[in-house]
Image (cartoon, rainbow, N blue to C red; front, side):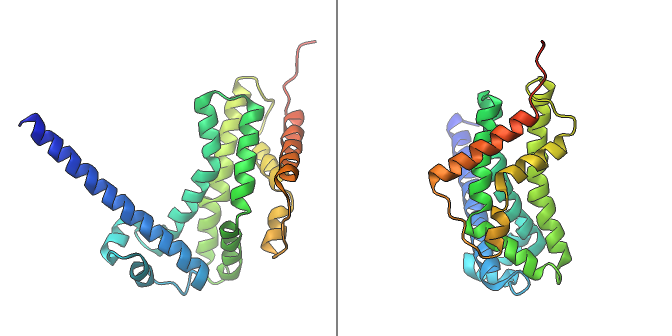
Length: 219
């Protein structure tokens, strides 16, 4: 086979993958919009296809069912939140800077209007669809906390932090960052922090966490 023929095949495969990813993103955008507007129970997969284009067979092939589609929405948001830690590991950032960047991303995304709307959706429909609440928690908060725990555990092994229970430490870190702001937002109360106030809050949260888990230094 000629080199030019291989190039044509590779280009064709790349285009096919790009089109599939574009279709996947269109479905996710449509699903997020409909779930928040109509509710999880009232949204059918046919509604999603009508809004995004494509076909039911494509949607089933990509996500399996409605629960799989919702799971991908939640895990995608979780990847956005914990991505700061992966970047910090790759860049070799020090612990304070890495946790500060993670805290800013956690605060901004968890308190975004869409994220708050999802929390309200879970509260409203969790009783009728208990599997939805379980799926959300496992794919979102639980998965995100596990990623934070992995990062903290790795830093503890290097002697940069003193942590016996990484999972508990991760819970404490997230609680310090979010404080009561998530509850306020879920209750429909405004969270009014300008950039300077938010920066001070996050700096205090990270400082408190690092002081609590500072490794002992030789005398």
